[in-house]
Length: 461
Image 1 (spheres, rainbow, N blue to C red):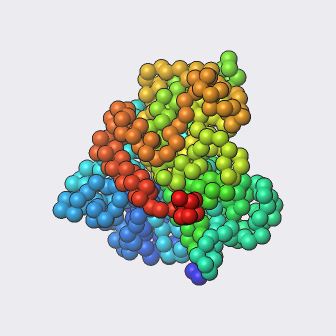
Image 2 (tube, rainbow, N blue to C red):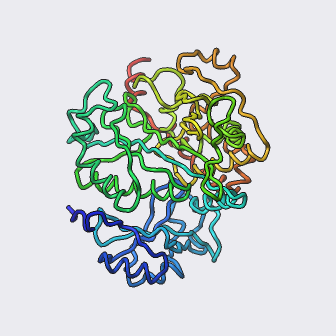
Image 3 (tube, rainbow, N blue to C red):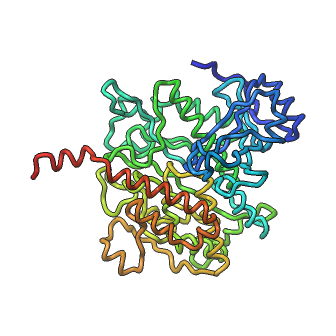
C-alpha cells in the first residue's frame, strides 16, 4: 500500500502561483517527482503520461505526444500527425493519494491546432460562446457510485457485507462502515481545493454519493475526472471496486450524475434567478429559454448524457426490479419534481437524465449548445408539470403532450445522428465518430447471449 497523506494539515495541494517558476517552486516544496500529463478519451476516461518534474517546461510549452490512434474517439489514424497535450498550468494539482505525483490537464493539439474531436476542447469552445455574451455556466455535478468487492467465485457484492437493508438510503450503519473509503476520498478532494459538503448512503446497497460545491463548467468536469481517479485508486488499495456503471444490477438503483446549472454574469450574479417569477420557481426568462432548449433537444441529448447500453437499464418507463427509480424519462420540467427530466430547485435547474458513465466535458458542451439554441430562438418550455409521472400510465402522460426519452441506446444514437444542432455545435467529425462507436457497441450487445436468455429459452421450445 502506498504512503498516505504527505501534506501538512490544512495545506492546500494546489499551487498559489500559475506561472512556470511558481509551479516549479510548488512542486519542489512538495517533493513531486512526476507530473501526469492528462486528457480524456471520448468516453471521459482519463489518459496520462508521466513526465519527470525536470521536464515541466516541455509539458507547458511544447506539450507531450500521444499516438492518437491508440485512444478511443480521437479520430486519428496511425499515419497521421500525433496528438499533443499542452499542459494548462491552472489545472496543476497534487495527487494526495499518490505521494510524489501531480497532474495537469491540457489542451489537445494536432498540427498546432486545437483538436476538434477532443471533448475537453469541445467544452472550451462552448464555454467561449457563453463568454462572448459575458456569461459563465456554473454547474454542480452529483456523482453516484457503487462500492463493491469481488468474491472468490467472480461475482460482486457490496464491499460492506452487512449492507443488506431493503431500503438503505441514508442508513447510518451503511455510511459508517464505508468510512475508510469515504474519508480518504473526501480528504483527498478537500486537499486539492474541492469543497466537499455532503456524503451519503444512497438507495442501493453499496451505493454512495459525495457532493462537492459548484464551479464553472470546465473546472467541474476536471473535478469529476479527478474524483473518479481518486475513487478508483483508494478503492483498489482497500481491495474494493468503485464502479460508476449506470445500472450495476437489475435489483439495484442506478448510478445517476445529476447536473445543477445556472448562468452567471461578469459580476458573478446568477442570471437564472428572478424572485419575481410569476410561476414561483425563481427563474428568469433567460432560464426558461435555456430550459426550453434542453427540452427541445432532449432525445439526441440523452445519447450524450446516458451514453452506454447499460444506461437504458436505468432509464425505464414504469416500475423496475429495484423499486422506485430516480431516473425520469419524461421530457418535462417542474418545481422540485424529481420525476421530470428537468427539476427546478428554485433559481437554477437540475438535469436528472445523466448517469455516472457520462463524459462530463461532452455532456456539458451539449447542454450549453442546446440551452443557447433555446435562448437564441426564445423557445418557451410551456407550463411546469408538478405531477408524479411515475403514477401515470403512458396514455395519461401522452394526453399531457409529454414526450418520452429514448428507451435504448440505438434509439438515442439515431436521434443524435439526425440532430442538425449537435452536428453543427459539436462538429460533424465528432458526431460521426461517436455515433459510429455507439452503433458498434449496440451491435456487439445484440450479438451477446445473456444469462437471462439462457434461463428463459434453453428448455422452453
